[in-house]
Picture 1 (spheres, rainbow, N blue to C red):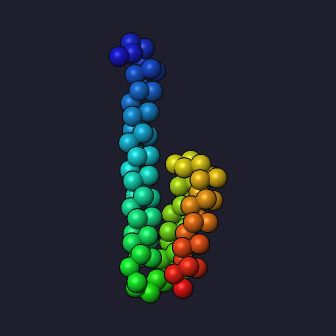
Picture 2 (tube, one colour):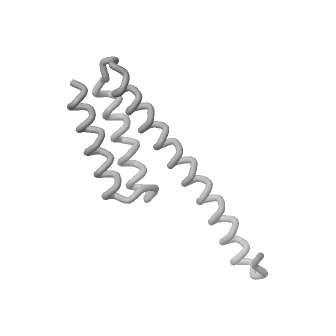
Length: 86
């Protein structure tokens, strides 16, 4: 445990940001899982669901939750799955 006041604050802030990032990453994974389940089930998938999922991936990349190349790869995989399901 740090003794310096600013170090104590850094520990608190880092823990709070870590928890926030974990929640956002978990929400992103849930969105991706929902989309994949919609594609896997033979229900007609809507472009709105694809757009919403891509929007979440872009937001995660812009907030440095995931790397921009990882976001690009995920979007490409989503589009490929969407086009294959048509």
